Length: 153
Image 1 (cartoon, helix red, strand yellow):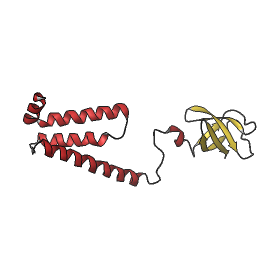
Image 2 (cartoon, one colour):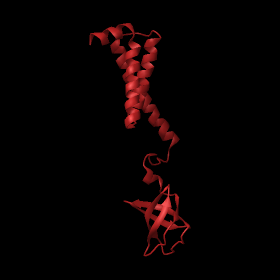
Image 3 (spheres, rainbow, N blue to C red):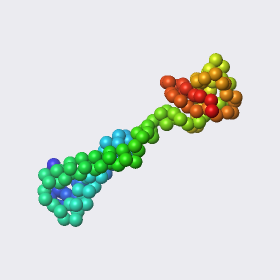
Image 4 (tube, rainbow, N blue to C red):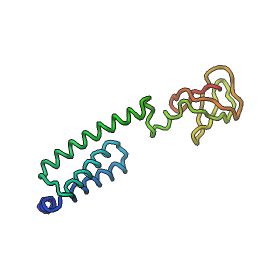
């Protein structure tokens, strides 16, 4: 602990840089989306202390907290402005299939068949009576577990 206090007294930016890199590594490994802005905030505090703005550890902690809060709020506003339709999460592959076209790969019997979409084969249930031919396109309307609800084009 004395070594850490001594390091902060002589070069506090190392502590903040280390914290920022640690938070960034955890964010990269776990993809939590919660640690990105604290990592950036720690990096900013590291830069501020490296250029000589040293007001003590308490002020650095407050600056870190304020920067984290401000950057998080600004990023939320930016995301809402850039994505007003509130599209599904890019990591939620299934939700992204809704509205996309799939190719029929087996005939639909009693409203059930198989389609190919986004690099994989899915069980599908057909909306309506018109059974599409093999190779034709259908549109994904909904997802019910491991089955897609599709309609013919």
